[in-house]
Image (tube, rainbow, N blue to C red; front, side):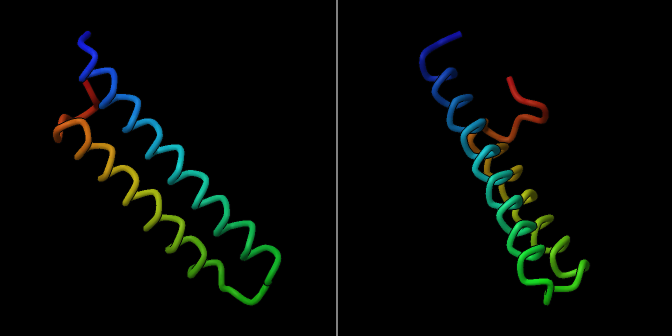
Length: 67
């Protein structure tokens, strides 16, 4: 595997991890506030995770499932 491929994989994994951290933050905030509805919280977490997935696929060149 080339250095370029390894770098792309590293960036993709970092983006997925960032997305998961963001989604966990959304859920934690909703639990603390207790004002957000479950639907709003789930929709925001889903948007965050979907964005991270799409970003990771873009980093990997649109390959389904990675290298």
